Length: 516
Image (cartoon, rainbow, N blue to C red):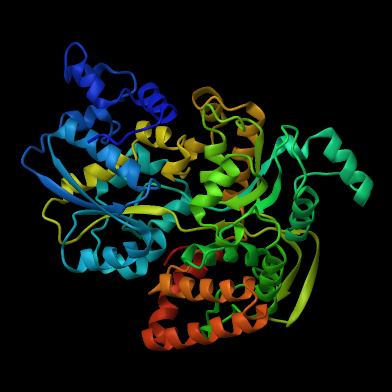
């Protein structure tokens, strides 16, 4: 069944896509699809609505794995329904909760349960041996050629692409521009600090401004909180912390590893840059809304999307929710790079280096990907489904629904005209958003996920340590010392040389070296 969409999502899909079931009922039936302006030329776009309408997969069943949540899970179910109507295939979608997703991905691949899977791109080292490389016709397709270079790297292991890009994730700062631009607040901040109120450039600046706002009343009379971040002890807490650590610990002139020293595979997670970031994180715990000490990722989406906080630094989802049609916050938000630092730990010299300009280290984080099982006997249909899932029409519609969790990963996504003309954003909001994404794409000092064997376990161990620090159970140094100890043990169990070879791919990306 077609999932129930709210009026905003329904309007977006009908306007941008001409949903297949509606086209099927139009005069001319399925033949009308070939003439639909949004369908495109099937010869140029092999995954368009028109191209899929020419496929005949009657009698073919493809089994697909995805999440149970609205993030990822809802758009997979939606596009599976559309694919069935277009091609005659039966798409059997299995949806599991996040805490089972990694295990079910591995188990499903090992037991040949699925033809197509959606999963976290950071799991590539664990799933690689079970995935079919992308076929040449997909690599040659307009939609793949449009993928930004760093997301093509994420989809690949060495020079071979194994994952179908469906989502492009990164963390960036999201803020309420109406509050930062409010004349009364600006005057108060100037009086208190002697400085102008603006978009923060470092983590101390962000927390200072968040503290200035925390507990004040907004112009509509509601109480404002400073910021929203994940604080529950799941793997995403580790992702949130990595983003905080990046500008302190990713030195632009020191190569060879951010998480580990590539030469020795000694963990770097307990070095001073990481400890400073966790010290900041601990100091932010009183800047959240009520219940902020148990905040999940989904809570951060709604908290920022409803305007309850001034800042969040996260995936696109809170920002997109704030910009959905009908949201009172719409066009009152802005985007910027995640805060940086003017001091960066130099692990070669064992000293802090001071920089005249802010050191930014964008975090290219997680991101959902698709893949086809090597064991599948229905590979063509499975690749067609994943290609259809992320075709131009579906992708542009999904981008506008915050809860779907689908984010820009194509060059065409960085065109402000799309956001102004199709998404109907105010030009200033579109400009801040696209400018932020372009800056991340151009950055030469980036941090990638731990795309290594059992990388999810490393991030979970980091989450446990961070949680112990932010809840006062351990000092930041003690918490990260324990994380380093556990990381070292896990690396020894996996095999140092094996893990080093996997980590080398991460370091090549972060150090801007060519794939090998």
